[in-house]
Each structure stands twice: as C-alpha cells, then as structure tokens.
Image (cartoon, rainbow, N blue to C red; front, side):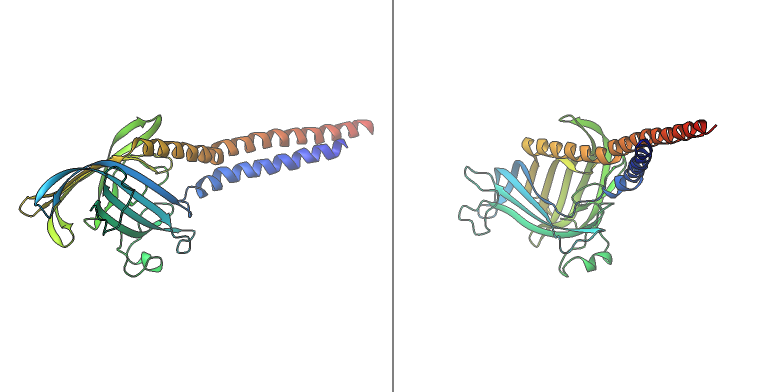
Length: 303
C-alpha cells in the first residue's frame, strides 16, 4: 500500500509539473489571439455642427453613434480573423433608435457605413493586399495597420492605425500611461491635418481629425475613444464638425470586460503554471522521498 502511494505521488507530481510547464511556455502565448467569435456593440455620443444642404445653414446637433462588430466565423481560421463592422450615426432626438433607414421621414440619419476587413490574430494588423484575397470578398477595401484593436501586450511605441476616410494607415503616437476607472491604459494620439478626401459622397474637400485612444496593454482592447472629425470644402467652407466619444457606460463595460480577460490570462499564464510547478515539485519530491525511505527500510531488514 505504501509503495502504491509513493509511486502515485510521483505520477501525480510529474503530471502537474508537466502541465504547469506547458501552461507557462505554450498555453500562455497560445491564448493571446483575437477570438474567432466576437459580437459587440459600441456606443458613442457627442455633438455635430453639420451643413444642412436644403438651407445651406450649419446646424448644431446632438448625435449618437453605434458601431456593431461581428466576426465572420466561416471566413476566419486559426491565423486570421475576418470582421464585419457596421457604423451608424444619427441625430439624437427623443425616441431616436440607435440607427434609422436612409429614407427616415425625420431625416435623422447622418451616416451609415459597412466595412469588411481581415486581421492577423496575433499581431492585430490588417492583412496586406495579397494576403487578404483568400479571406475577403472581391469588392472589400484593403486595409493597413491596426483597425479595431491593439495586439496583446501592447508596447509604449507608435503604431500604424487605419483611417477609413483616407483609405490608408496613419500614425497612432504613444503619448503616455494613465489610470481609467481603476485600469491602467496606454494612450495613443492620432492626428490628421487638412488632408484631401471625399468629405461628402463624391464631394472633394479637406479632412482633419484628432483621435485619442485608451488601450488596455494586456489585451489590446480599446477602452475609451475620443474623436473629432472636421470636414470642409476645398475653399474652407464647413460641412461637418463631429465630436464624439465612448459613453461613460461603454467605458465602464470595456473596463469590466478587460479585467475579466486579464484575470483569465493571469490564470493561464501565472497562477496555473505556478500552482502546477510548485505542487508538482512538492508531490514529486515527497513521492521520491517515500520510495527511498522504503528502500532503505527493506535493505535494513535484510542485514
């Protein structure tokens, strides 16, 4: 009986030790990939000074924005995740839903767009033109840089960040670290100054933007976003001055989700390996000690 217990301890200890090492050196990195099943709604609110084409006057409006992001599970694989994003901006009048149709009788729709893109599950970077042919429909716009998240273990450095209006990546400059609702975040700043662009349908004009993004560095999640988009005609006449940011409720929800994900990463990358290695070594050592003690006892009995 004592012999069975000794070897049982050695077996269990060895098993726990192997599991701990696998968690530390394999699983901890393997789980740091963008999930293949994502369905999220992000809410922003703010104001807009918008040109009314019918009157030629600039109107001051309250606005709200819904960004709906889902993964295309069938098009994604172990290395690449494909996203479908729908963004709707509406005039925030009493009773206005999160999005309205283009023929809304109250003319509350400001803009509605759909975007399809593919990103590397580890780096979070959009695929190159050649790479995304296997994942995206033929009419999809090729993206560049980061699109909807930062990589896991984000660094204090600048990143390329996709700007849909310009159709190219711009620089997201790391500007500092701060605490947001109890969560440490890295802050990045995007600045666009009077770049030529289609500012309203096929109308050419100038586009400027300032965007501040607060990122959870451990998961790469965007916790808070504050942005201002300014669009004018080429002669400087204003068309739109939009200022929106994540709602307070959205920021708190993002913080809560990030903290839950961080706890899961810590369980796999720190707590699990530590428990497995320490407990495995203890049981393994105890089993070996008992085997050696029994052998000494047997040898002593035969003298």
